[in-house]
Image 1 (cartoon, rainbow, N blue to C red):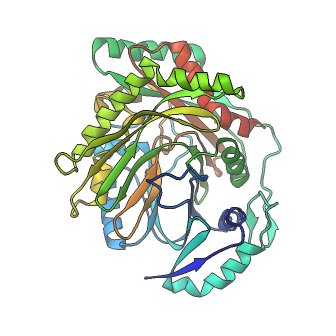
Image 2: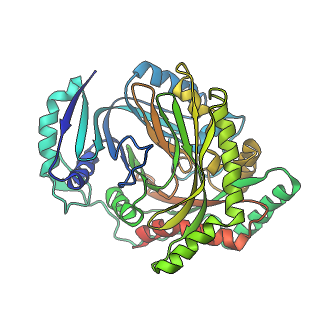
Image 3: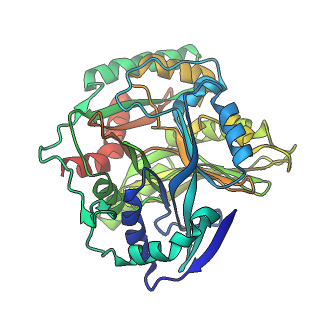
Length: 442
């Protein structure tokens, strides 16, 4: 059982900064921030969950069964992630590529303390076992000043400055010439009719590197201001995400998925920026990519949907973010009351925007041509509520960090179709990687 308290700070933006800083003392942290990109599908502006009361960490073997059991037995708020490699549980697939990050395939926890921010109000939900700590926690949160940008050791009352002084040297897992060779193989599969489209990704990484996770997240978020930004901490492993994409949301019997396919850079010149937006909107290749994935999402949703309830609400709509213009579609459905929320996740995972069509063939070819196990990249982070509602993003535009291994990684990719030009695909990857590279090299 939880005690619910409402809190109205003087400045919600200051409180958000203080809250995230305060959270750094815990081993289990999920912070979700919409950066004021509210829409009719938004439930909260920001959410923080910390301090595991119970948790589950497992590999992909029977991953969805274990998650379903944990979610059903807990019957409470749970926060966490699914890695891309849960595909191996959903289908007869495997992941044999290099993994420098070593994230568990599935990780969820039941937090002792939850903060739900909407407008100027914070709804605080503490488990009854710790609700006597709320007053002291609020004092501690409000005592932290805005100027703190680094992890704060609340127990010691001092800043933790475990940051490498060495410049970060970013390496490519796939070099440019090899990228072109791999794309030629991908295009051969497409021309042969094995697939219509596949999302091909490449990793950028740094070894023997220490970063300050919170400072890095704050810099990335300041650059991108994305609607599905995430700071996640699982003991020594971190996700620092500026994701623009929702994977899937359930509210009541209503399901919504918002795949992104189609990217264009932004320009500081207004006229040039509008021209780039117009070109994206009318680009036949980008539209065909998006429509293929919309068809895939419609098919996935139909597996749990009430008959005739799958509908496309928005097709190829252009949304503008600080770094890029994106082409986004919105697909909705309705499910029966008795449909288990984890079954909806299992029948739609991994998301179509990060796989391809047909989905299983695309995932097999991706595994063969990519050099890195995707892990949490192109997985999903989010939460389940006690009522069986959920909301999950797509883990893209993200920096991943294993502090023990001193390994930092970010990956980017793009949809490859028959109309793809390898050089343009490579350049699109660099546009998507720009914010992460700036943050790490700065």
